Image (cartoon, rainbow over all chains, first blue to last red):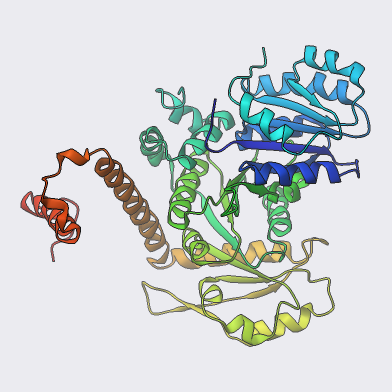
Length: 135
Length: 326
């Protein structure tokens, strides 16, 4: 589905100082024509609250200091509980590959490893936005 | 689209964040169905106090807005925030960072609804959209709706006009008195806040701004409002309660004459203008080129004039409902 204005919520843990990746990605998505809400969260409910108020198409979570499984376990039901069942949910940062499958089972649509070529995330979003469901 | 189905307006009035948020997206995208819902919301509008926050980039508008949210919440007043950030004129993308500064003030509180909007490069269009979004938050029952804009450019002034009270945020060291005298921005301020009051130069900035003797003339009565200058520190949460007090003072002041109803009337007129413009553009665009007489468009100026005159005349012939007789 092609959308004129794709809105993305980029969330990063508040206690996590590793912000360069998220900021770089925010800029990249902005330059790809997307509207990016950047913010730092303490608990996953804050991500879900922000996502519903901003009515975003995509939720991206940066994880640099572990906790991805717990975040996914809380986030997906929190999004669904607020009626956001067709939002695309992606993760990036330092996530061991062995966690990818469990994360996909929890409802995360895609994990991005560090070092991808520029534009990879934007391309994925553009191709998949609007088609995803949180089944 | 489910949002245009019957029931959306009721759900918005009953404070459904999901439905309100989706309606706002439709407003942003100019979806015609949103108009019908807005019309149903109208009877539920009119009780919210509208506050505009404007000022140069980096003045601390978002941080100050966060402090205002906290103060208003402590007084038991619910808050809606519309935070506007610029879109890139090149990619049309935008980085909306205001929410990040407001997080602690709003976290997990159902009494606070924050929505970030990208300006999308259409100043007139943005002002119209913000006007409609204000109605959504008003209908949701928010006691105070804060509109925060990047204080640069004509379009921002249009947005500021939506508010009952416009707060202009300055910072010490922004410039000398001459900077503050430059035309435009200070002429719309009802309350001036000097932020970063923890800095040593803040007191001098306050003095200089007070020395300007800013006043606002009531457009409906022979009286003036002296624009107060308040030193605040959003960082240290100083002067915030006083600032809310000044905003409320001005709000009450506008109710003592026809000033406030004049602001409301201007808002509705702006919505009328925006809607007519949008509808006519859509109608015009739907007319096939072949429908035009071969020779008629040879002189587009005369053709356009004739076209508009015809519409206006048709209204005049019917007795021009809604317009006062000249």
